[in-house]
Length: 439
Image (cartoon, rainbow, N blue to C red; front, side, top):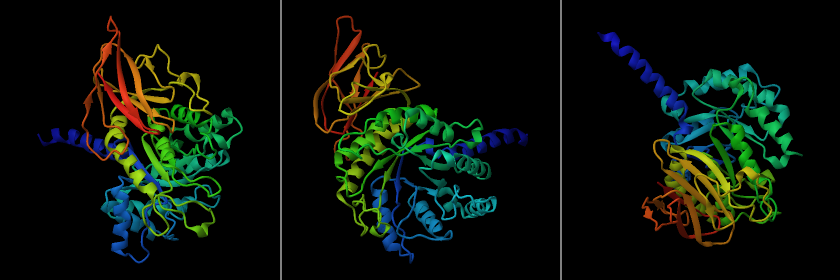
């Protein structure tokens, strides 16, 4: 009699293990590059201030490196894992010896790293999100990165191997870039493929939005082939350029959502110390450990990502991404991403600056429209038409979001045969977004 419980128990255990290893598919990830500082002397007060600021801004992911306290052993990561466990965060371990593109990196090096992080106490172990190899490696390093991706996946399968890729503007042609992406993402051996697709692209390295930005979003989505995509938000830049503005932060945070991206990482969270010689402006946290104005902008963005936009993305399927036009200027958007009147989810939008992401509830006819204002100017009285006789409900807007989920039923009109439903949005400020539910 007792044996009838064994099979269900085994299935339950395997399900739980599989679910844990897929933590990155359960919640929208908001991460940092240059993580909150950890004190050298185990100063609990300093560490609490540092990580409370991080948690208060709705960050849930640490990706390293930690510029303020390097270490040549496991001590820094162990300290950080303690804090990650305390604050319910995931950490992508970036160990000083994890130099997978170095020809001297060996099976012995890899085994020492895996052995250490597999045998630490349960709380630290649960805080490990995966192993970070770094990123922006050229195609010539792909074979080594894939080799060690396979190794870490096989030897610690619950913890994904993480690497972030270069942007399109680092290549001479789109075909060269797509070859590069395939080289890292779509090896014939599935064991060599990363579970998470991450990349950086900073569209404000020139006065106008760089022309291949939306192409890059689209091709990454295609090459990811259903794997979660994480993107980087540029919070600082070299002082030879203008500093990043609030509008630019919002633009970089919200536009990738329309393509179904499932994680955002700020480059950088902490400011990079001057002695590294990079000559950057202050980031979200300045060199003294204090929040800058950008921190408070990011905090509002992150509240919206974690409370409104993120859950919609994680719980529904992205079935379409559309631009009303190629505006604002300097964009070069592939034709298949331009909205037409034949679209099955949205027929027309009156303003040429709008980017639309469509997310479908798989259990019903309900779907969601994310409407993002790509321009820096406020838009008003935006007229939208969707097919069929529909009810439309608006979520809170992203502008100065402070929490809550109060939805508003919108007034609608229909054509004579009720083949379309029309509604208006009063305002979407520059760089902001609005979300509506259509049913």
